[in-house]
Length: 127
Image (cartoon, rainbow, N blue to C red; front, side, top):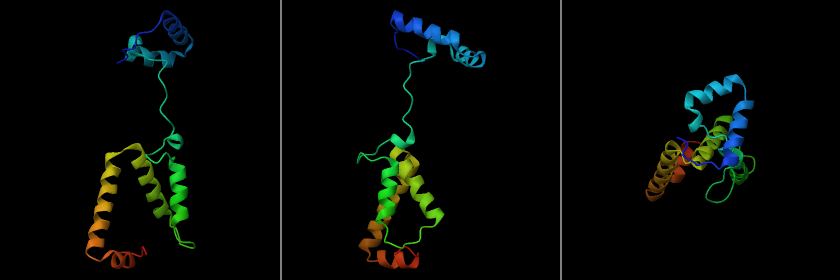
């Protein structure tokens, strides 16, 4: 629900915007209620300018990740797509991807503690 109080100038601008828009868009606004409509709402950040805790964009993170792989490592499409999906999910704060991230960290630590991390990497073709 739109609760921002508008100045008289903003209210006049809101009315002018409403009067200039198409009938189809006006019907959409009428359904939600003119008073609930916020024509001054800031848009969401596009995915390419969202940044993570390290102040990097998803593009920067993926570039750095791919460059961190050993030279000549084949990168199948599924691998790159999975890395990209996890990158975007983590940056967006998705609980689904946070769960994946937490599990992978836990599992890697478990295998390392048991001295099986290299065995796992070799058996799965990861190392």
